Length: 81
Image (tube, rainbow, N blue to C red; front, side, top):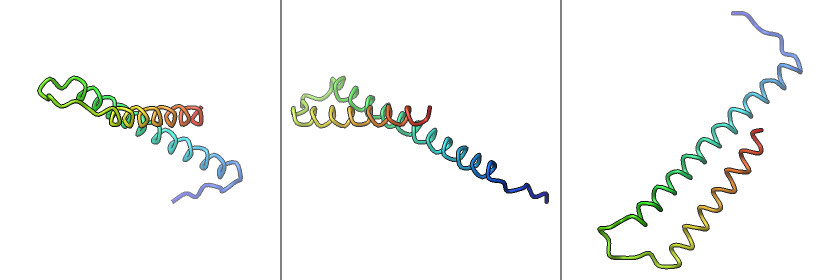
């Protein structure tokens, strides 16, 4: 088994690579959550079978959650660049 030299630059390279992978995973998961929330909200709005409407408080809560997720995604995208 060949050992590679542990230099400061390789150490920093490993940290940067791991951090980039971590941020990429976070952004991907945030996108998935955002898509799921968008789909859930669309399903609620497009639900023709239901006579029950969402209460204004529920709509405001969904909008606040979506806005929070969008800001987190934007923040993660800035950190990943």
